[in-house]
Image 1 (cartoon, rainbow, N blue to C red):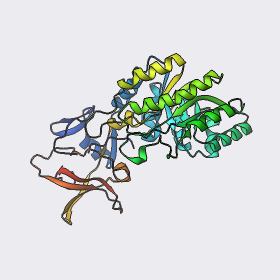
Image 2: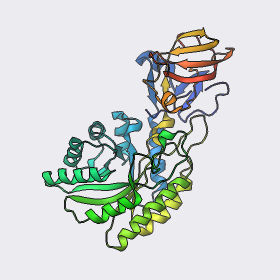
Image 3: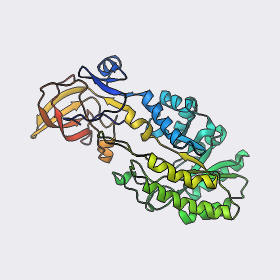
Image 4: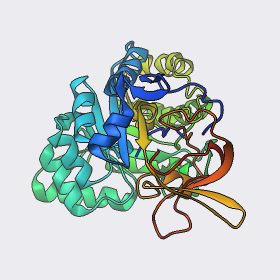
Length: 378
């Protein structure tokens, strides 16, 4: 999930827009979250749809000077309701599986706004994308390119695609698992190999080369890595164009960072002018794939305290939500603020491990976190 879970305590700091305290209790657009939890149960994700829509429009305004498609990364949150509202604003979807293709289409995302990424697409997924008429596959290996050509030939189609280029850029992300643009990553095709594949296969009637793609990581907060990747990819574009091999769009990927501790996230304005000035003279359409940047600061995870226990000199706050609802703390060491839905006036601040109910030591939401000591039922 892409929710920026309201998780850390003491000084609460800036809450996401749309969430505020009323008489000491947390609300979303004026709706009391205690009432939401009582009605629907916990653990429960709650999203501020107005905030989601505002973030989509922000990207669209930022790149209004060029032809632009926001292809929302459905892996951030595949809720049909959210996909439907995002599509209604003219956005598309970046998908990585047959299931996400089904969800995007079911939610009303037009097929010609869908790009299909992922390093391990199965043959049946290629067939499904071709049958649906998606905008493009983002091909990540020579083997995938060969399989796509074979499948398209059998179906009597010309497969729309771009090559996802690996520019060998080690992006400054919070964890090694979220860096996808360096040479040792499983993602993408090295620069030289990608250019050779374009040249070798450009005239194949089974393949319709529509653009070029790159994605360098996730939770990036500085524009420089994007511009470095952009310039590397544009080198390929310019050399191909000089030889009469023209591409229609450049997909710069996603991974734009958000604020998990009340801090500001990615400064989109710093990227806008630099990207626009490079693409506009080349006549290239821009595609971006934000996911977390659209939904991450618009959602919270509500959990209920089951027990509070002391053991081994530690305080454990056991909640009904854990790694099955939010894997980032365990998998990535991801930080999420934790705040009580209702202020506990006078409650002592205790350094606690906030853990879930799963039979795994790695099932936690936070470790050694100062927290106003809650009570079961909070």
